[in-house]
Length: 65
Image (cartoon, rainbow, N blue to C red; front, top):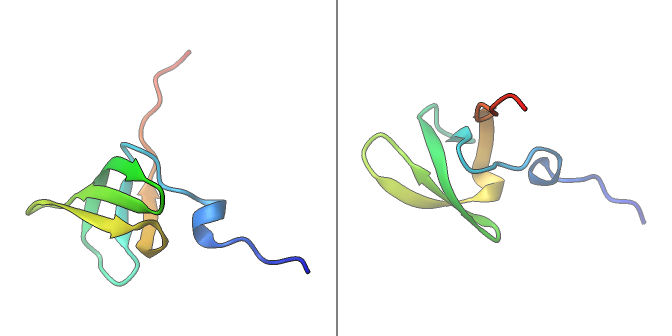
């Protein structure tokens, strides 16, 4: 049976990306990745969040090659 890929599988967060939790408008920066958890630097402090809860707002800038 074919399953539809989750948002995380289609658009995973990477270190340096700007993200927000799907119920919040507050943006944070991805600091560290650990399996399905992500350490996000929010304006007040860094907290662990679930990858499934995050919406990627902006990708980190990649240097030209």
